[in-house]
Structures are given as C-alpha cells and as structure tokens.
Length: 326
Image (cartoon, rainbow, N blue to C red; front, side, top):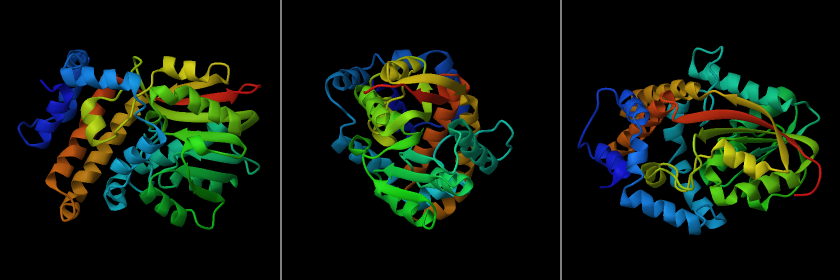
C-alpha cells in the first residue's frame, strides 16, 4: 500500500531483515519493481505535487539541506574516511576508499585543467575537501558556496590559510565572475523545475571560454520527484536527473564535451561507507538512535544494489561555455 516508503520504514522498524540487503535490491531493480511501486497512491501524489510546486525553492532548499547535512559532522566523519567527500570515489587505479577519493579529486582537477591563474567556483562545497585540494595543489583561488551551516563552519576552519573563501549562499544569489566551475554531487538538489535557471546562472557567472565540470548521479529516465523513502529520510526534494534533462537545461548555453560514467565505483564507495559506519557504531550509538543506524544501513546498501543493477548511473560531465547571454 505504501510502496517503497513502506518498504524502507518497515525495515527501520525491524519488521524484516535480509542477509544481503545489497543483493536483494539489485534483484528488485533488475526485475523492475520500481515501475510497480510507482503505481502506489503515495508515489502518484508525489508526482502530482512536483508538477505544480517547486520543492527546491530557496526556502525549501535551506530546509532540505538542514534535514540531512546538519545531522552532525561527527556522524558523517566516521564513515567518509580521510577525505570528507560525500560523493563517489574513483576506483580506476585505487584499492582503498581514501585512494579513490584522492583520485576523484585529482580527476576533477584534470577535467577542469586547473592552474594557479584560475578563479574556481565550487558549487555546494560540502565540508571544503575539494576546495582545499584544488587551492593547495594548484594554487587557484576557490569560492566555495553552501547553505548547510554545519558544513560551512567546518569548511571555514578546514580551509583557513588557503586560497579558499567559503560563502553561505544559495546558487540563485550568486554574483562575481569565474573562469572555472565545479558542481560536485549538488545537481540532484536542484530539482527539475530549476534545471534551466541553474544553468543560466552558471552561464552568467562563467567567463567566455570558461569550463564547468559536473559530477552527478544520473537516472535512466526523466523524473520530477524523488523516491518517497529517500525523500522523507535522506534527501528531501532531491531528484536524480537524466541526461536528457541535463541536455535540455544547457541547450544554447554550454556544449557538452566530456561524459565519463563510473556508476559501479559508487557501489564500492557505498560498501566502504557501510563498513566504516558499522565499525564506528558502538561509539555513535551513545549519541544516535538505533533507527538512525538502520536508516543509514538501508540507504547505503539499497543504493549500492541499484548501482550494481545499473538502475542508477554516475557521471563526470565537462561543459564549455557558449558565447552570448543566457
């Protein structure tokens, strides 16, 4: 009756368990259960609301960010590893999570072709890890914007003494001029009603001849709303974009020059986050409820199964700014 929302909530209430949650979700995605779940009244209502209401307005965006990213830095830092990137590692040559996150940051810088002359805009900069890496390794100046207070406080301390300026700002309030832009694991928070406006703003603040690189989860089909359990418990207002939606958003503004898909690396990343989280739980359990443990376990392993089944993709996408005004 409650589709995927009921499935996740019943797991958090320990109504059921699985010996291999990741494999269970791989099989569910492979047999198309998501299509069946979309027929539930709850999912139909969510799609209807998303057609008429902007779930990622400036006011809602702040609420959405605070819901998840302000849970507590201590919780996230226990599972993210040495590098505080809440996004996919790059396992092409790496064997460990830390090696993969270091390789991912290096790959982003290569795609951006960073140098000490660059002024880089880091959109949705998280805890400041990539901004600090780019500034210290390449000598460029980085402006990192964010709206999550816990992340901002850490990023300002972590990046002190480097060429990084951490600014509390919604992307819609951006000003200034940059010749490089990085959008890392942020576009899923923009929402389908705002894709075009987001790209218009990026076009406006990016200098002629500038480069933008985006790292994002991608979907096989175009959607207007988030999966209900994820929307309620993890990323309110989040929507996974399709490549068709991205192409429509950049039409006439940017040329898409590079597409690198590495979704299977996200399976490896999520597995390692789950291992780290499980190992750290005895200490975390003094401050967080058992339902929090089950929520993150379900999140990590269900999404890992979806990536294994190729129900989700993950991209590095490189863009060049086209001339003209947005």
